[in-house]
Each structure stands twice: as structure tokens, then as C-alpha cells.
Image (cartoon, rainbow, N blue to C red; front, side, top):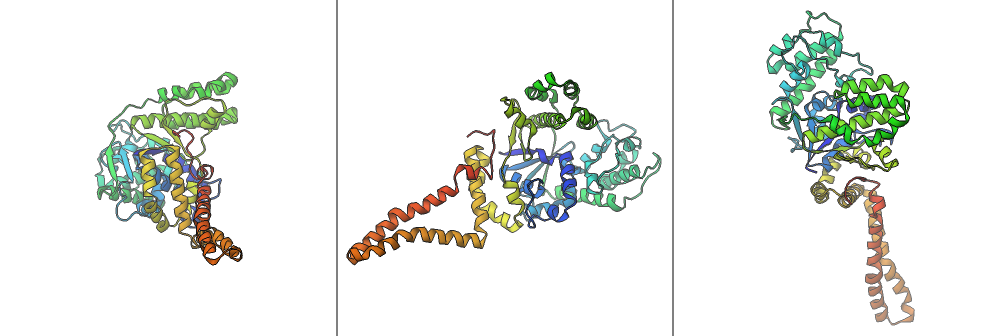
Length: 446
């Protein structure tokens, strides 16, 4: 895969994951501490998995500028996680609404009409970095004048946006201003400026969005089979599908689902996955790429249960333990893995298939085992034992033959029996079922 959007780097997904991990800061911050529990999602693990699986990770400007994970960790920590030195080595490509990140942040808050006298009604997901239940700021921002943000130089954009957020948070009147952000808002401004500096130094590539076509309604229609039976059997779900099919603004769709969740019972998650899946289908089509998802996909499971495929979406659904395996690795071990598995990584990225993903899974597992001295010693003694066993048996039969014949017999037995036993053991360790426990893509060609 040359370039890939990652569903789990969506701003809402980052916010939800951040809040689920914030009670265990060591787990969130350090990939080399305790293993990741199965019921948690590791951003370091997903970041590394995306790095292995895609030649270039495509980030939208909002995912970087309003992403709790990217802003909380900052470029230096992300670079360390990816075992990069200096630049990001073309790991990321940022598609921005303006030619620079500074101007993209400015227009994130100015909205579709940059001449509007008030700021846009934008809810910042990245505020989850500071509060478990951040106060809704969209309405407060929309009441504030946009003049200050429109007129400030690019070098002041980060601090101006942070100051406007702080003023909205503190409930100031529209004509009152925070001159310089403080506390968490100053930290947020510094986080933005750190990523601005990376882009200015050409450590990450930023390119302006050129295609404006975003056919969400078409994507929803292509996924209609997933919710067709639901509409026929559940009146509340039918009304929700009708509303969501006509909604192209994500915050409106998610707010509606939150409000209707009690009436929709267990169908709310299915409907959200259906709508968000179509949203990313349209996003991938707009940017001429495909998209990868690490989390469990309720829609895909529902489609499989009903025996219907999803047409139109370029979704690559990931399954397996790769994310947890990569989460546990210290950065230097991950660097060794990327070097040792470079051939398998290239094959997968060039020709994505279950066969090449099996080979990549084997390369990851083999590299992960090789850096463990205990596992290395165990493998060595296993190979020695399997190779020498036939020779020992041949030597014990020397009483029945001459020494010469016994020696020849032992050598033949070693070659004929010992080597195949070693090879058989290695082949058993690489059987498909075991490899697909590490990496499995149900929808890619076999």
C-alpha cells in the first residue's frame, strides 16, 4: 500500500482512545512497559503497525491539529516511537486545507466562510488531553468575533486560537479577550507550534487539498445493504437511517446518534460504524487512496453474518496481535525489526495479499523472538538436538556394525533425518493459522 488513511487516527477516535488510556498514563506514554490489555487500543502500536503496512500514512490536517494523541505526545515522542532520527523519513503526508499548517489551523476556526464576523462552531476533540468531559465550546466560539484571528500574523495563529479557546472556556463576553493563553491552553499552543516547526523544517510533508469532491451520500448508498434489514424490522432504526442518509456533517451525525442511543438500543453502534465507514469511504475516494482500520468493525461483522459484502469501500480491516506486539517493543527493538523485515515490508506494500501479510507476520514474529536472548538460546538448542539425535542413535548401534559403517550410517542419518526435522519444526512455527493470529486481512486477495 503506497498511501493509507487510518480510521483510528480520526479526531473522535483519538479522543475516545485517549480518554480510555488516561487513567493509566504509563501504558499510554511508554511502549516498553506492561503489555497492552486485549480490551484496550494502543496508539503507539497502531502508529507502528500503520508504519509497517503503508509506505506513507496520510493524515488530514484536522487529525494532526485536533488529534489528542499527536498533540499530547508531540513530534519528538512520535519520532522516537517510530525509531526515526531527524526527519520522519516520509512517514507522514499531511493533506491540508491551506498550503501551511498555520493557515490550516486559522481556517479550522474561521470555518467555510473566512469573512464571517464570528468564529466557526467547531468542537475541539483535542481538549480531551485536559478534561475527561470538556465543556462544549462550539456555541461559545460561534458567539466570538473572528476579527482578531483573521488579522493576526501566521506566527501568532497558535497562540491566538488557544486564547480564543480559553476565552470561550472562561465564558468571556464577545468583546473580552485573553491576551496570552495560560495553563493548558498555553500547552496546546506549544503543541501546535511544535508541529508547525516540523513542517517548516520539511520534516513532514504538507500539501494543499486539491480535490473537493466528497460524495458521502453515494458512499452511504453503497453500504445500504448493511442496514436494509434493520430498517425493515426496527421503526426507530429506520428513522435514524433516513436522518443519517441525509446528513453530511459528522458532528451532526454523531450528536444525533448520542441523543437517540436509548431508543436505538444495541443498534446505535452498528449505525455509527455504518455512517463512519461510509464517511471514510468518501474520504478515501476524495484523496484517491484506501483506508485501514485496526479496531473491531461492527458493520463488517454484521455484513458477514448476513452474507452480504460491502461494495464501493476501499476498506482494509485488520485483525490480529500485531498492534499489541509492536506496543511492547522498545524503540531500538522496533528499529531492528524494520531493518530485518524490510523485504517482507516491501512485498506487502507493493503487492498486498494474505500471502504477503503472512510473510510479514513471520518476519515480525521472527525478529521479535530474535531479540530475546532466552528465545534465541532455546531455538539454538532445539536445532542442535534435532540435528544430533539421529547421529546419537547411529552411534549407539555401533556394536552391531564396524566403526566405519557406524560412522557412515550416522552421517547419513544426520543429513536424511536431522535436517528435515529442523525444517519441519520451522515450517510448523510458520503455519498459516499461527501467522494469521499476528496479521490477518479478511478482505484482501489470497
